[in-house]
Every structure is written in C-alpha cells, then in structure tokens.
Image (cartoon, rainbow, N blue to C red):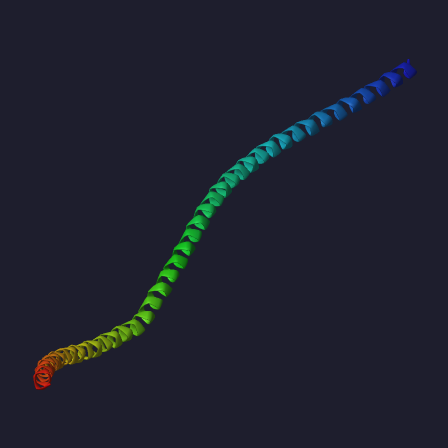
Length: 155
C-alpha cells in the first residue's frame, strides 16, 4: 500500500511538474505572440514610413529633374544672351571704323565732284578752242583756194 501511495505521489508530482511546465510554455507562447503582434505592428509602421519616404523621394526626384531642366534651359538662355551681347558689341565696335570709312568716302566723293567740274570746264574750253581752230582752218582753206586761183590767173 505504501509503495503504491509513493508511486501515486510520484506520478502526481510528475504530472504537476508537467502541468507547470505546460502552463509556463503557454505563458511564454502568449508572451511571444504578443511580442510578434507588437513587432508586426512596428514592421507595418516602418513599411508605411518607408512607402511615405519612397513617395516623397520620388516626388523629390521629379522636382529635382524639373529643376535640373529649368537650370539647363536657363543656362542655354544665358549662353544665347551672351552670344547676342558679343555680337552687339562687335557691331558697335565695327560701326566706328565704318562711320570713319563713310566720312572718307564722302570726302573722296566731294573731291571727285570738284575734279569732274574742272574736267567739264576743261572739255568746254577744248570745245571752244576746237571751234576757233576749225574756223581758222576754214579761213586758211579759203585763203589757200584764193591764193591758188590767183596763182592760176597769173600763170
């Protein structure tokens, strides 16, 4: 009887020990489940934050591309403006010698006009002189004919 009671006490202790271990495992499992749930919430929060960050980063990238394009356009415009400025400066620089050249050509033109007037006067003088010489030639010719008649009459 005492050995049976000792055996039963021993089994009861073993059962109680197993029950305690099982309870302990259940509590540990519940704690783990709570931790897992908490970690899943944190992970979801982090995923949402990452998505927000990614969205913001994408928006920032688009903004950066837009700003880059605007900057490149502004640079092109600046280059164009610089070229126009250089061309305008060249035109201004080249205008002075051109104005000087025009003045010189106008002076040369005045000289040519004076020269032409003198030449016209000379031509008019030559024409008058030529007319007078022609009259003298005609006169000499008449006199020559007269002299030849007189010579014929004498002989």
